[in-house]
Image (tube, rainbow, N blue to C red):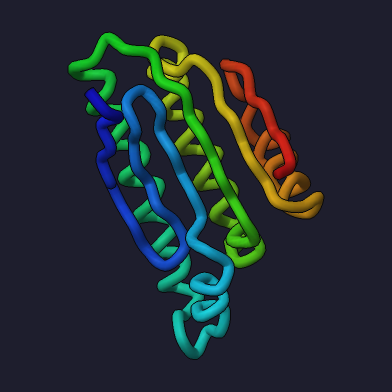
Length: 143
């Protein structure tokens, strides 16, 4: 039997999906992201809404896991450039979402892998990890 893939959310910047016991948050290809850089194409408020939507779906996915699964998951971030366009206040929303999931992470998260494509993206994740202290191992690597 093959991998079970479930797409949870896809927007201009991100794709949230699962493959078996792995949860993925991937950025869309850079060429797609760059179409939405200008506030004339997608306003700052709309960009924030996309981040909020991702965080809401991410939170709800973990709540579903908590309510009916006994499996341990690995979280995978594959992020390119998109964090350049995330308004600063969203980092605090990310922190708050992760903190609100700590008890679920403690029970159902094995570890997290973060793949970045350059040193600047690594610094963005380092910033997030300064704001949010993970309770499970986080491995950041450059592709």
